[in-house]
Length: 442
Image (cartoon, rainbow, N blue to C red; front, top):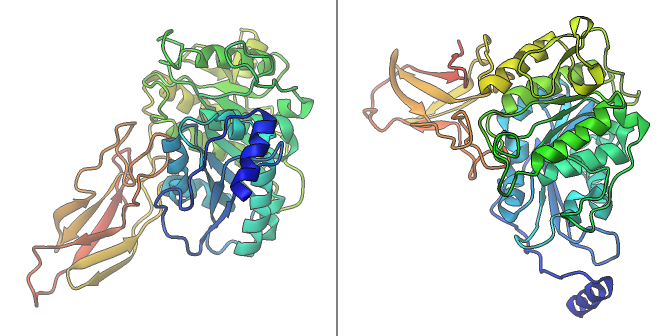
């Protein structure tokens, strides 16, 4: 009877009905503290979210009060939606969240492949309300009720960029910063996508730092094909926001199309700079304004930046960058995505040996993440974990990488079995972490 009622409701609304997947949507990682998860069923009520959705949050251990939440929002398509289930388990993004006493949230919309993505990635179609309810419910689960009211740092890919940009337009006072990979909100009707409602630009959104991050093969150097309209949409968004004084940067990925590539090596330092400047010391006070005395500027499709005081071009037609460190990283990124790093990863901890099996824990390097672990026995290198790190979307990393910049599933454990160890023999083992810049821990 419930199914018949739902179908009738959808027919009345004039929508194409597609059954959503039943839980579990995929085979997600197991959930136990410091991870928490909620799932909401689809709704047939007008204006509410028509897809089931899961939200997984990671809470840094030892944090008494959260200062914000970093949202890692996947893109459209069933594969991208499934990949969202591992977003909160990403060690590199956790390093950013840990530094700022923030939660790390990974949504996973249970969106059938042929369904209309706009029904979730436009937050006005119910996903904004469910997201905020999830923060309330996850706050209660985790013992951090402040999760419901702290600021948001939004990262979104493709449809997730539409969602993050839409949330910025709807709730600019809550958004500390927004990174939009390949997707932006629209301020004018799009003749190619009828039914998408344009946004009204609130004045408060102009004070939020934003980075647009299209791939060069999405209309910049490759002007035909499925993703060729990404760059024109980014240009229109840039003109609308930056032309009114918005704090908007553009970082064109010189290697990629719609995949995320190596963007995290600029996105994480950029968000680090924005969170450092904007987050209040404790939950409650309003976000701080971005400083204006350290800004650098660059031409829209240029590769060199200058201090704003020395810049001779039109400031409101130029890329906005928050400070010199980010400007220098941006220069490397738009050249070849190879951002230098001089800081080694943190040392491995909690190494334990049971028989011939080694287990350990490790934190990711904030700048360059984790590429692999090197195993030593009695001072001699005997293996690496993984045996051969791969990543078809960018730098090889320990956890692997899916299309929407999330760890590969199933998650790679921090363990190694020494199959050549002789029974009854005693060995001294050492495990060293290596980041994606090739630097090793102590």
